[in-house]
Length: 281
Image (cartoon, rainbow, N blue to C red; front, side):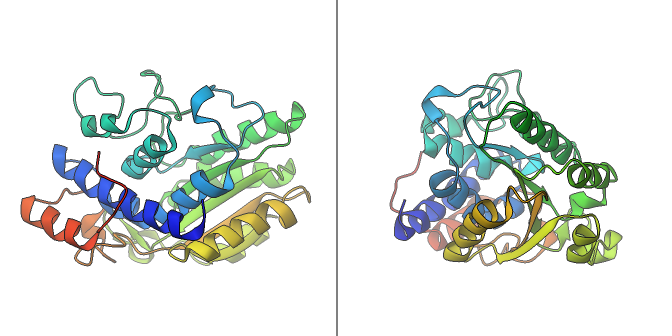
């Protein structure tokens, strides 16, 4: 996609998110809205993937793992609009017997989902295993992962960070959503994780930074990550600055919209701000 199409798609995905969460009165809109630009850039411009021939092992393809699985609305919208499953299925989000559960799962066989996630802190370990498997099998494609900044309070992440550097897993590009918010408040107040850049550097990673709401910068950073930094013996970490609830003014920048659904009036206000042209599901 060109830049304008990416921006149009991001606007529509944000609209999908608030409608999905409103319809079932459950879910996590804040982080989903904040990570929308990244997810759109990844699936519609950066990754080599085939929605029509999904396989769980992803041989010969770039693969993605969502570690902070509670932001499933943005993943489901992007997968549907990439052609992994019918767009109309978004209307089943969090319904009984739906394949689109609140946290992604694998036993329903939803195309595009390779791990059950949402138990925070586990995704990077899985990404390390998948990336190492690709290296051992001579598969030169990339493994991408996304993690919340509050999620890094989980100790398993740091074992995986150490493991990736030690084993020179240089086909792994892990992005951290640095929005400074988690369910109980600001990350700096709950358990401060700064300085993140210094920590990843100390663990032997290549570290990049980007504005997660500047589509051109997101694309440029991801392209540099895979073309200039990958394959050099170090895993790559991208620290992505975002705003929780981006695109809906009354949701922006506050942990209060981490995991609650808009009411009818709030949905109307949000949709007024999220004008899109691709068509609702």
